[in-house]
Image 1 (cartoon, rainbow, N blue to C red):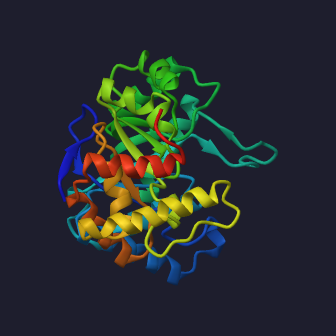
Image 2: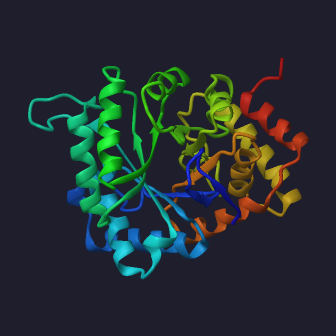
Length: 313
């Protein structure tokens, strides 16, 4: 795969990322059997062997088990740690942690620092390459966050920082108080979710040289190969027409539907990095071909109009 830098930092990765949220097949740690853990490790190995170098996870994915799965893979594969970029996230707290507390977001310095230490233990590494704040905390205090980031960077625990699911105004408010640039903003983005193309998110990424990471780029699978639009999808008819168009256009590029949907994102000048979240080794490897597809401007707009469900103004 081709490579690109993340933001203005020194990290260079492939144009596709591997995301491990689904790798153990559940969000409940008690449901993670040895077989599920082995399958999760196999998915990571498949991504590594296919050439992915950006591995994205988070402390909340199966309450830390997905971080541990990546960590176990790093232990088993000699040299893997030195060849990949490890990205994880913090800031979401589940209800009853501790007992009696609600589901909430927490960017307090205390929580950021403790979360980082816990992630490092689960991952089995000394330094996180990219540490992201997971969802906007309406009570965030940018100077307090800056202090926490400074401590983590000075201690060698984190190399670079980013955010996830942040609006442009949240990015600006936080960045104004940080001595180092935020290098990524990870947001939900794909043909099923075009908000970022119109709300200023991608414009800001271009302006500030922030790399956009796209989570759920094929809608959790329904836009991908063999996927079907859910019956209760609010725009089911529109999405089915989009899928039909992808199936019509994909053969022109000797591509699959998944590969075309990913290549459509890769075409954007903000240099979007789609996060491939499949746990199927064959699908993980197949997605790599998207990196070599150059969608024409004409086809890009044909697909956009179908995704919008209406003509351009």
